Length: 267
Ligand code: SAM
Image (cartoon, rainbow, N blue to C red):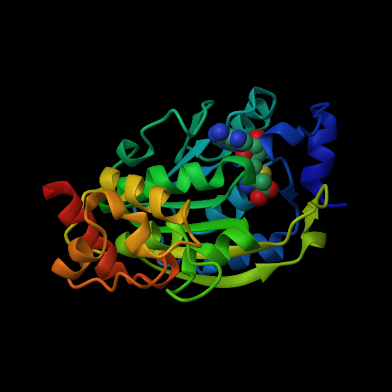
């Protein structure tokens, strides 16, 4: 097994399932992830660097500033060793969910991460809320989550995450990564997703209200809109904003979601 695993042994490291610790040790794969992120922004933020294989791939390139956010205290010494060799590194031993990542370092900033899957959606939503602060987000997700991020209306996987991600960014799956590339081997498949935030808003909407609306309608996925919005006036309310009352949430376009969100705010 490669170097970084031996390094972990030296630090008497124990893998923690609760922190989603499935590490990449193959530098061919981590180099490929970084290649897809070129050109690198002034500040590169890596969430969950683990044993630092992806970090080392980022450091091979000329990076101005790299900020590492790692929750597991037992990995910090190992990461500090990297810092001793490279003073562009700054380390936060913090929970990424509690840190205002969008304020770290100088812009333009980007995120590159092999995320812990148990908190990946929450982290993504936090970043999307502040998407104007990022030039790009290149992040690994469980394949099912990646498919939801890029799903289009009418598809089975179209969901709250599709709407929110695509309203704020141009999102695409770059490539899949086999489970054999990780140690320990995860039970799920993985895909690398890149999200490029739109510089100018495509549609007018309020982020928090859109989160509420998408959560509400997708919890009633099987119902028609006229029934979901019965208390707001059902068909007549939907017709008044030119939204077909006889369709289900999975058929609503991004534009229609925005029309709905705006009308509900005024209602
Ligand atoms: N980037 C490394 C790699 O590719 O080998 C490790 C990826 S591993 C899937 C996820 C990493 O995120 C682990 O190092 C874990 O300790 C860390 N982590 C888990 N929850 C976190 C959180 N809430 N905030 C910051 N780091 C977290």
